[in-house]
Length: 315
Ligand code: SF4
Image (cartoon, rainbow, N blue to C red; front, side, top):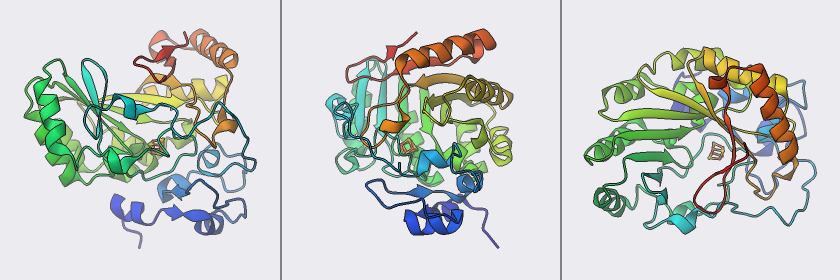
């Protein structure tokens, strides 16, 4: 019998082309530069008979790796804004911690797929990270990122949150995660209780790109997160969610689950993701159509991260 345990699911994710080809009964997966990892809870949402399935496209290597000068190994160069290893400080009031090197899924468009996690790990450099945050009273928000911070065990997260709570000027803890949707079993009752009992405002920023990712299990788990502010950020991906129908359905379905659409990101230009690029003009057109179709509070901000401090707002 399959264990209903997120660590078990993570351990038995599909890894590499052979396992993926066996599961999907195909020969389409190839072990190229991209390292394949697909959790079973996500794999089960993919239509095995549709080679253009929008979930499949996010985790399978591209058939043709296009060459482009404008795509680089590390498009955001986060490392430039790292005063101490594992901590990124771009905006005065908040810092981002690289809390984990691991993700339960490998997304082919990920801008951090070549990130040097060994040199930027907040947990292994905790004393310096904590001192930095304690000494800057302008910091009132901490963002846990990675990798995926929910790839840490509940016990490790509890210790981390406890340490952050000890810094009096920190009011808000934001958690950036894709695990919650691709492995809903990750939302354990221990995790939900931890958030409920924290003195911090807890904000969970989910990463969901397509309404097909919203499983029944995920919907059930979201009901356990009362008191947590739930937001979503998507990446606009050609062939996955670049249509008004898909984006409208995504925003409406998220709202049904108590999640507000927050950001719609333009693709970060990481090598190997060229085929996902949506042109600016078309993105702006789609965003305008969303505004015509939906209430204002359901419209994510269309943005692009840049190498400097702020995001570029396309609209
Ligand atoms: S879950 Fe997020 S950090 Fe991990 S591979 Fe996907 S996009 Fe990158």
